[in-house]
Amino acid sequence: MAFNYVLKRILWLFPIVLGVITLVFFLIHFIPGDPVDIMLGENARPMDKQLLHHELGLDKPLFSQYINFLKNIAQGNLGESLHSKQPVLSIILKKYPATMELMLAAIIVALIISMPLGILSALKQYSFMDNTSLIISLLGISMPNFWLGPLLIILFSLQLGWLPVSGRGGISHLILPAITLGTAMAAILTRMIRSSLLDVLDEEYITTAKAKGLPYKRVILKHALKNALIPVITIVGLQIGALLTGSIITEMIFAWPGLGRLTIQAIYTRDYPLVQGCVLVIAMSYVLVNLLTDIVYTFIDPRIHYN
Image 1 (cartoon, rainbow, N blue to C red):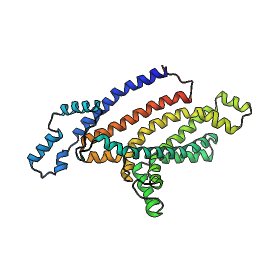
Image 2 (cartoon, helix red, strand yellow; image 1 turned 60 degrees about the vertical axis):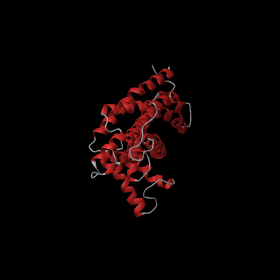
Image 3 (cartoon, rainbow, N blue to C red; image 1 turned 90 degrees about the vertical axis):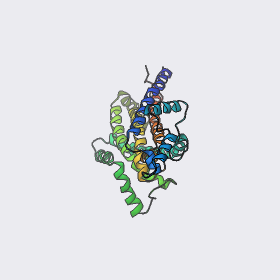
Image 4 (cartoon, rainbow, N blue to C red; image 1 turned 90 degrees about the horizontal axis):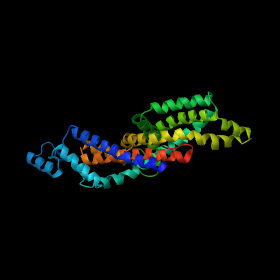
């Protein structure tokens, strides 16, 4: 049954990806500005512009460009960058590891913050700890990346001099971007863990485990927390997509050489194939993460069946 479900989900990927490709292709082409003007300058001769339009295939009808793009996608070819003349796929593969590194670090930061706060908030409901956790969560959700990032740079880099301002290097370069990207996710997970754990603590099997004399710590961590994490995994899976899109702003703030920064640079230069390739990879990553999230459900809770 699970195999049939996974197969159906994989088949549904095709119309979703086609829709994303179509939307991105036409939106990027409708953005004002000519990449040839950017590449040659507005003072270039009309003959040179016309020649470059022909070389890049931009003189063809828009629908013909779209059909050619779909054919190339079907062959595993994302095209060639208009500026660097390098294959789009190779450019993306060079930048993708940096984005994945930042995303995983942000998830770790979010879990380190949210797990203890969420558990303590549930166990100490309506206490000072619970109220403090609520305030921290509200602050985390309310602080946008474009405000939190510069604030951390000013405090920890410029004022205290503890961490580097930008770039990608060791762990020290990763701390500030990861905190910036993972704060909002930590705030959401904290409240979700608290709510899920409170619901589970009222179940009969928890009462039975306590009545059998099991250590309280074991009851919470092995029995209650395991089942409480099921909705949390859903949020983590959905938030990974938000991290991929949120990394665009974070990577620009910290000059992180990842896929998000590459996307912004491609938009600035009207590099159509590169923009389409970047968005396609981000969309595919989001869809695949959601698929993996659904599959993980069956390993965490065997009671879940797919029809």
